[in-house]
Image 1 (cartoon, one colour):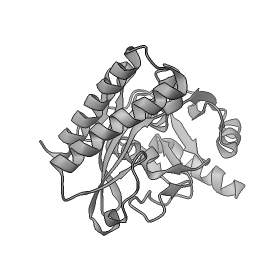
Image 2 (tube, rainbow, N blue to C red):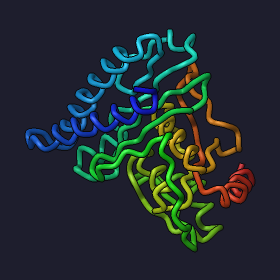
Image 3 (cartoon, rainbow, N blue to C red):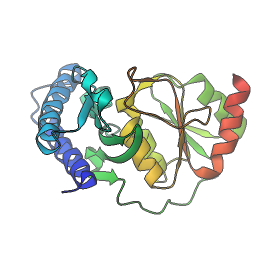
Image 4 (cartoon, rainbow, N blue to C red):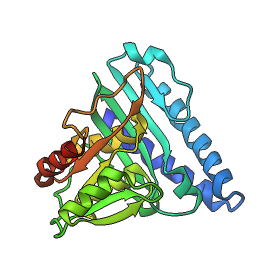
Length: 243
């Protein structure tokens, strides 16, 4: 199978494994989240190394191997994005599988297992009609100051949500128009969502308009903006006025 088919297949299978772990009823909350992370990560890392042995790999749940920095092709994965939500048996968590090529988020799949849905870069769907006023997804627990301020200026409705992947896919699925994050993330939090969002025609960038670059020595990524293209210029301008 090609790279995108592999990404989508891995995301789907990992999602099913995670649902099975949760359905066992033997674990809950933090223990469930830890078990899910470990189970999905073990499967994904073994599968990627078996299927693409020459590629680099970066996983949230795996010790970083600096050899990835010499690779053009690097798989960047988050076995459970939104571990807290997964452990609480909520639906707003995701599985992220991405392939960055020369630092760019080219190929990706994001599984939303509770919705039995995998969104992928090779199967873009038309964007649903936008809402007025716009809707902005923000963190359930720590909404970014800039996001709240921008929402007030444009009259946006705030939609608290867990996983970064769930937030980004809410834009793809037409459940919201803007995802502005300034609270800090890591490459595995956004690589697959950014790839899928861009493939669906959404604006994807840092909050100063620069592109998102992956497979860096420091995997911390301070901010991002994923939104419908017609909102990009206004949101970027409003954020720039705050700094």
